[in-house]
Image (cartoon, rainbow, N blue to C red):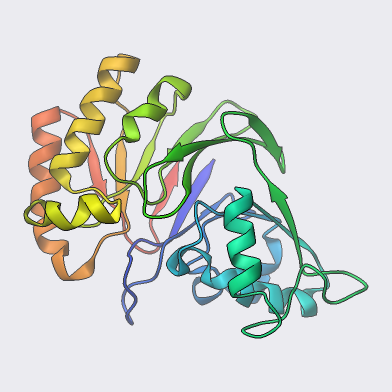
Length: 256
């Protein structure tokens, strides 16, 4: 299994892209940077998209890739909670901001939506996917994604404190977790539903207590303005926990 980080930030610039992952070139996880990061042939290989929640930085390129699909003459499946799919339909693919690509083109719609049940394994293009609820400003889920050969990782999407409620349900070989703000901004992180290195420390300690091990960790959804400070605090956290914690970046490839 190869996981390619297309977007590792929550702010966009010439050097940073919004949050998005690509698994084995075919399964997208969040859609902040699908079209801006991939060539047309790479986009055409995508068969499904998992969305963690409805915030713009995670769903933006669903509409963009849907338009491209009209020329690729294909349908991409989009999976998430019903509330996320409804928000996407009502606010972006509403015939005003952008066409409803679940109905257009009429002969082969560009998108097909599927609602996921929490805590239930679902087959998505041969991957076993489990959606788990998380604490964020809007309804949100994280995903454990497992391949046929037993490789698995957990992606938190956007989450605040309380991520540890997921640990009993998963056994991943890699954690990819939201880490948006530096420690000095905890008072802003908690109400917004995000983590700092100090808050992440508590969640990882709980993981090790519940599971008896701690896999490598990659943090993304970084706020660029605080990235240097976040990297210093992450290095200190990794040393204190005795585990590998890496700050993700655009173009990073992770292999399991």
